[in-house]
Length: 189
Image 1 (cartoon, rainbow, N blue to C red):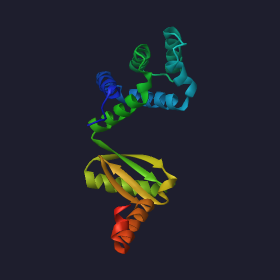
Image 2 (cartoon, helix red, strand yellow; image 1 turned 120 degrees about the horizontal axis):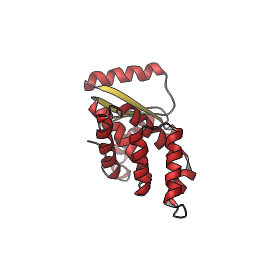
Image 3 (cartoon, helix red, strand yellow; image 1 turned 90 degrees about the vertical axis):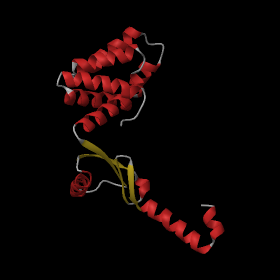
Image 4 (cartoon, rainbow, N blue to C red; image 1 turned 30 degrees about the vertical axis):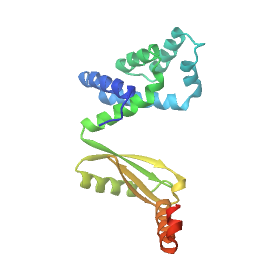
């Protein structure tokens, strides 16, 4: 299903509450924004990891952030609870698990597409259509760039990896060449 741990438990509970309030989209968006802020701000993470800051200061920071982002009441309350329980470091995991759960319940599948550089939108649209035809489900593409791939694409769908990168092809070619020239060298890859 979805990754394990504390983040998943909080995400499942929050998802069920959001579903009751018919606010899953809003709560998901809020969590995504909060997780991005958490990841981007070392100062923010420091406030919650530093014992020098008391619980009142931490609650005030959470209140300010959730007000600025105009978060849903469920998110505000969850953030306060996480701050009180010293679990705000779980925010990225909670946001990720919540998004995956929302996708799963909506009949969508996440596909991570890693390329050496950004590709044209038409490529992504065609890939999304092909993956939808192959899986029979709506596809949510998550794009990432990794220059170490040199070229090509690595796509992960439902735990299956399709590695069409130039880096992988060169690795395979190297193995084939070593195996055909000297069997002893092939063992030391």
